[in-house]
Image 1 (cartoon, one colour):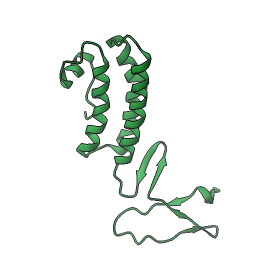
Image 2: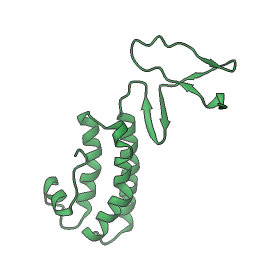
Image 3: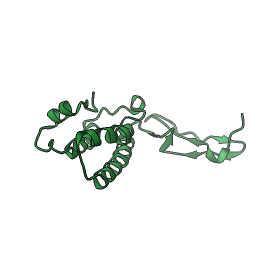
Length: 141
């Protein structure tokens, strides 16, 4: 199999790594601290904070577009839009980067809190009641 040497990078994982230099076809490979592969951001410390913040940024942009472009914010309109366009960004490959830090979980859950508040008539309810009334589960589950 042929490799494109310009696209190949080395990522040193772990604290006791000697950070050796590698070369391919006489060219030294570049060292990377983080890299995106199949849409998932992988860092050398194997933490998922960059992936979480990137997913939240994209999801918030889409949620803002939904909020601006739909005048009627009923359950029948907002929830299918949320499930189709927003939640998939929050759940994409979550088996790989499964957030386990509370700050990452709260960041992701904040998008869903915002989405459930968009539905008319749900603004005054607590988050758990909004989820139950809308037929959603928390992202943590």
